[in-house]
Length: 460
Image 1 (tube, helix red, strand yellow):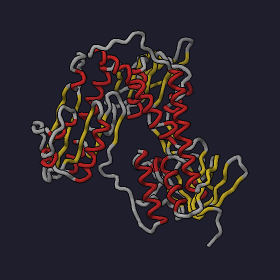
Image 2: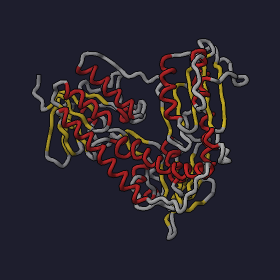
Image 3: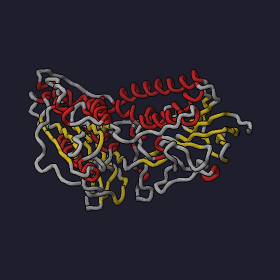
Image 4: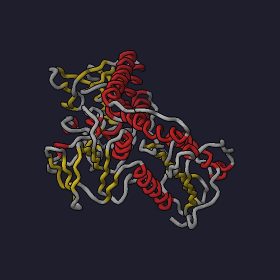
C-alpha cells in the first residue's frame, strides 16, 4: 500500500467535517482537516448560531409589547447594535475555539488554508507551499449564498453572510427571497425597528412547506409590520445619494438603505479541483454521492451541504457518523432522510416534521385525514393582539399513522423536536389521542384535535 501523509484528510471544518475528523482520529487514525476561514463552518460562524442570537435580540421588542399588556412599563427602552455585535462576536469566537480545541484533543491536525485537490490522493494548501497526500479524503466544504451576478447593480447588495457584520443598523431594508433565510432575517430586522420589505418571485413564501403553513405565516409576519410583495422580483438596483433604489418588474421603485439577497445557497465547489481527482457533480452542481456518501472517486467521500441532499447541520453530523461507521468501523450505514424535523426561526417561528398535506395525498393510496386548529395563544390574552397559532396534523387514512405535523407559533421549534419522535416512531392518531394533555399549554392542542377538516379524506 502506498505511504501517505495521512489516513484521512478532511476539507472543511464545519460541523460535519469536524465530527468525522474527530471520530476517525479517536480510532487511532492519522487525520488532518483544512479550513480556509474559521473552524465551525456555516452553522457556528455565519449561519444558525449567530442568526439565532439575532432572532433572540429582535424578539425583545415584541416581548416588551406583551409585557405592557400585563402591567409592565418601560421608559426609554432602546437597542444598541454595536453592543449586540460585540457580544455576538465574542460568543462566536468562543464556540469556534471550542471546535478547534476539540480537534486538538482528538489528535487531529488543523491546517489553516484553502485545500485544493490535485489528484485523488493529493491536496495542495494554496499559498502555503505545502502538498499533502492522504489515503482517503472527505469533502465537507458546505455551501455559500447565491445571488444573480448578472443583474445590474447587484454589487450594491449583500447576502446573509454580510448581514452579521453590518457596521450600523439600517433604517430601511429590502430582502429578496422567500425561503427560510429570507423570512428569518425579515423578522430580525423588523424586530429591531428597521422598516422591512420582503420581495419574492413566487406566489407565496416558504416554497416546499405545507400550503397552510405558507399562507398562515405570510399573514402573521405582515402583522409584525413586514411588507410582503409576492410574484415579483428585481430588475436592477440603482445607487443614489440617498440610498439604493430597487427597480422591480412590476414597475415599483423602492428606496432602501440596504438590499439583502437571500435567494438560495449553492454547494461550495468552485476551484476545488474536483475534476483533477475524478469527482463528478450532479445536475444541480452538487457533489454526486452514493447512499454511503462515496463520490465517483473510490477513495473520496463528501457530506453535508456540498452534496445538497438535506442541508441541515444535524443531518451533516449524522452523515459524518455514518461515514465513519462505514469506512472505519466496517459497519455500513447511511442516514435515513425520512421524517427529519426542521424549524424556521421566523417571527412567529415554524416547526415541521414529515409530509405536507399535498405530499401525503400523493403518497397515501387511500387518502388522508387532516386536523387543523388556529387559535390565539394564552400569552396574548391581555394584549389585544390578533396573532394566531396554526397546528396541523396530517394522517394516513388507511394506517392512521400521523405522517405530518406542522406548527406556526411561539415555541414551535421546541415542540416539533418532541413531535418528531412520535412521527419517526410511526405512532397512530389514536396513540396521540391517548396521550394526556398538559394544561394550560399550546402543545396540548396536538393531542386534543378531534374534528377532521371537512372533506379532508380523499384518494391520493
